Image (cartoon, rainbow, N blue to C red):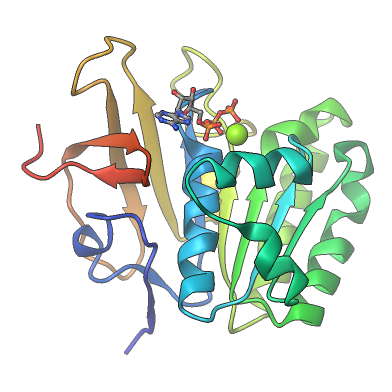
Length: 225
Ligand SMILES: Nc1ncnc2c1ncn2[C@@H]1O[C@H](COP(=O)(O)OP(=O)(O)OP(=O)(O)O)[C@@H](O)[C@H]1O
Ligand SMILES: [Mg+2]
């Protein structure tokens, strides 16, 4: 039986047979401002509440900004960093060749249970050749899978108006599951929605599920559309 890791996103685990599968790699994608970083922080925070250690590697925002973003929701990351249960670090996307080693070291040193990489979109800033980036992403996935206790969330982005699911078109193939966040921009109750596009070894909900962002973070609304 696969061990399930609760995402901590209210309403999501019941749509996915109890959550993510331990040691799998999930892709969280969507256009800009859809709540991906927030989802990633919530995933890490919920793990910490269960005694699961986390690593958050940001290639966009600084660790200070990530801490400040999380604190708005009452998630005091610094407390856990001081206890050695959480590591938040910035990785310069220009040094994408060193990312695999950085991930390997951090996850190994902390024996992390949850890893978030935010986001692959930044990799394009340093390297023009997409085939190199694709190979790097595929190799990253292999690296994190060597750590059996670790369940990974890779954030990517859907270029505005694009039909693709990720920035480099490889992320969706190497991931075991894909969650897509949408924002319709209508400002009403149904403006934000979530879709599960793939989830290996899991029967999952097929609908488009409206979700909200409130003081408590991301939550799927009951009842569906
Ligand atoms: N306290 C809050 N209450 C309600 N909504 C919020 C709150 N904080 C953030 N949001 C919403 O979440 C959005 C930002 O979420 P987040 O930074 O996670 O998005 P993202 O998908 O990571 O964006 P990017 O592509 O820029 O990295 C904001 O644009 C805002 O709409
Ligand atoms: Mg973000």
